[in-house]
Image 1 (cartoon, protein in one colour):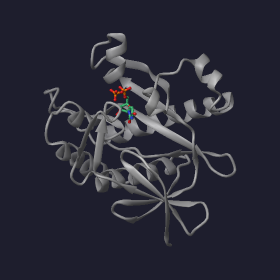
Image 2 (cartoon, protein in one colour):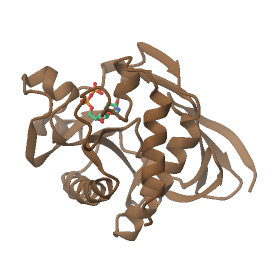
Image 3 (cartoon, rainbow, N blue to C red):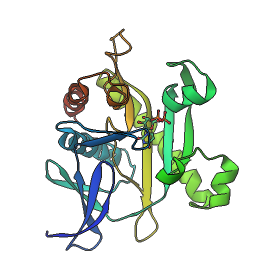
Image 4 (cartoon, rainbow, N blue to C red):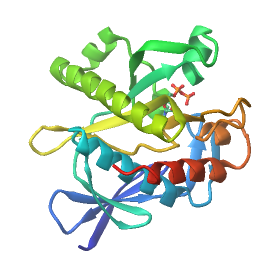
Amino acid sequence: MKLGEKLYEGKAKILYATDVPDQLLTFFKDDATAFNAQKKGSIRGKGEINNAISAHLFKLMASKGVPTHFISLPSPTQMLVKAVTIIPLEVVVRNIAAGSLCKQTGLALGTNIQPPLVEFYLKDDALGDPLLTPDRLRLLNLATPEEVETLTRLALTINDVLRDFFNQCEITLVDFKLEFGRDRTGQILLADEISPDTCRLWKQGEPDPQKRVLDKDRFRQDLGDVEGGYRQVLDRVLGQAV
Ligand code: UDP
């Protein structure tokens, strides 16, 4: 397989064409951004760590019947994926209140959310990725009502699978963000990544609210040793067979 032209460069990944039809190569970068790219930095080894965690979790999803774009890992920082057109929606699932939910509603950090919340945000940096109401989601028509139903169902299934898996790793899945795409036939596939960049993950049995954080909040909140947090997730995830 040969690397083709650069198709897109995002904040954490670069996407390349390949000489194989419908297969693209994603390169995971060490670059980190937060607060809509107002805070920038680099986390040593992040590209490799997130690539390996995402690959493991995509395999887990496939084993549970959730279709994903994952094909293989040609190198530690590269993921071969099926070509999809990304639906410009960020699908967030929340089990425990944190982040923007606490800021916008006043709910206390750590409040249990049952049943889990599924939220749709518009994927548009220039607009600050706004939260969409169901009516606005319908108005924008970025996904058909049937597709929105599919995205919601898939998000909840993914949450069930991920929550169980992370529990086995003695990690609590607080919340996470998913992106989906359509392949050439219109089938919806889970895309992007599932990693400490896109999930909130708390180490179980750790009472210190700063020490328990193993995800990008270490970077957002300057908690220190970001790489150490990500590596703990990697070790625990790779320690569980799928
Ligand atoms: N998230 C993400 N990318 C985004 C926004 C959110 O991966 O552009 C993830 C974030 O890491 C967290 C979840 O989605 O796991 C919910 O994020 P929230 O809405 O609380 O926003 P934040 O606190 O990151 O502003």
